[in-house]
Length: 162
Image (cartoon, rainbow, N blue to C red; front, top):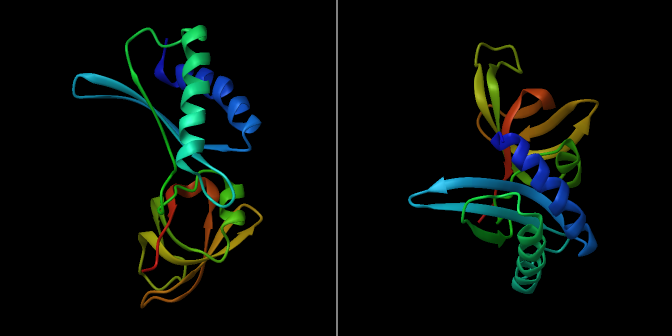
């Protein structure tokens, strides 16, 4: 079974469980690290995730995955919040977190202001989404509003301003 297929099957099982708790699945990882395999769930909800949320999800998901028996090797189940630098995975995330500080990396270099300064990393205040573009008001020396096609985003995450 291909890993992507396994992740899709796990997601189909896990998401309804999380929805029952009022939680969303931000990210799912199944990785081999050292001698062990890890299944990591990053969960979130408005107002943030508590330790009790993580423990409850771990018990429920662990029991269901035991019955489903999709993963044939021994693994460790870890459930946690996505942290202060929460990844932005869906276009809805970019709308939901408008007004927050973000960092976005693109697959290819972009020159949004046509000044010959092509780059792949953009930081600033997330303005939101317009059409299929993510809009960021840059806070660095380049400044200005940049629009990045959602399909061109490799990675995006919230930044924490100390």
